[in-house]
Length: 465
Ligand code: GDP
Image (cartoon, rainbow, N blue to C red):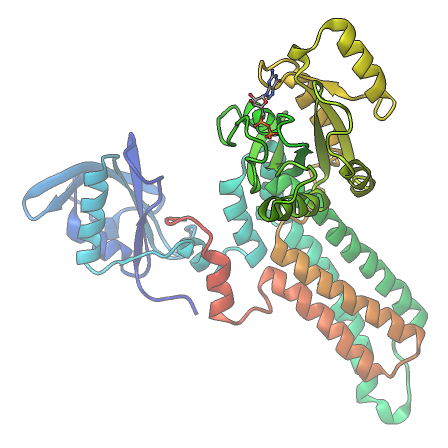
């Protein structure tokens, strides 16, 4: 059941701005607003204002005018939350925003928790859970691709696909359960061959959705790119050039980047998540060794590996690690980045290039320090991303919670298929189908009844949404 309190929050970003919007939602939204608002046109109170209209007036504390504002009124159920809602657009001074909020709280409003408006929208049936989560993703979307997926999910594309799957499963289970009612008579209403075909179709669709998560996660959180190489090869300098800021510590002392630094940038609408790693070299220093082990783990988590090589050093400066790096990069895109080109004469450079091209004919030659050919490296990164083109109607799973639920649903439907193949009794079959239905139902919220789970989902939202 939705909360019966009336909540308020500043819905625009924290700090000073041109204007700010304070949103009030709940059964007393109009009455509370009327205690602090004097419309210019005296004949209408907020409670009497036509829905979906804006009025102009003053927010007052006793006789003092706090601000000139615009008040928008949305009447339940035709509002974002499904409740009576007022939006006060005021001037964006921090003092005014806080004063209005204080007044509203004095009059009985509760300060909204993060995501509480969207949570109420969900509880009032305005959105299902996956759509509500998409609202959070939409606000956080920082690339064209993640924006596209969030819009598609918010508009219900994913929910629709899930509801088709659930309908098919319900149909399936009702046939099997009908048999159970007639168990004495040993009838089979559900043709097992047809069920087997249907179950495989459902399995294919769930598998397609779970498989889309690798791309979806890369789109939402960035394609993971590990920057590896010997100490002092120029990894931190390169990261700073790519990020256009001094994030990683650059120094001449070997082994300075002992920990792993992550940051994201957008190139050509794609988000890349860079992971700077501790330099790889033979060492007896225990802490540095831990850093090197972590570097190898980071390689496993990345899709693209930039192996930075100092052209002024001898090719085997990573020592015995070279073979391990190549082995670890077998299943990912490995790009050799030959750095410090500014320190070599033309003929010297050619000789070194000839050597490295044996290993990677497309190796990149750059100077991280003098920003030479970093743009070419960026182009190469985009070409290596290999993300699928996302069409208008493609459903891509980007949310870890959804992915986990789909993975469980996949196991359940696989069990159904095995059960059909092994001719297991109808009641066991029905239980496995119900498990699959349950897991799919947790994505849209049909099967979520715990307040705690909901709060967990909405806690990462911003205040005021
Ligand atoms: P890391 O240990 O691989 O992270 O290496 P750093 O980025 O800390 O760089 C080590 C040293 O090499 C620093 O003094 C950098 O200024 C220098 N360096 C990095 N890239 C270049 C480059 O392209 N040209 C030159 N001449 N020096 C560079």
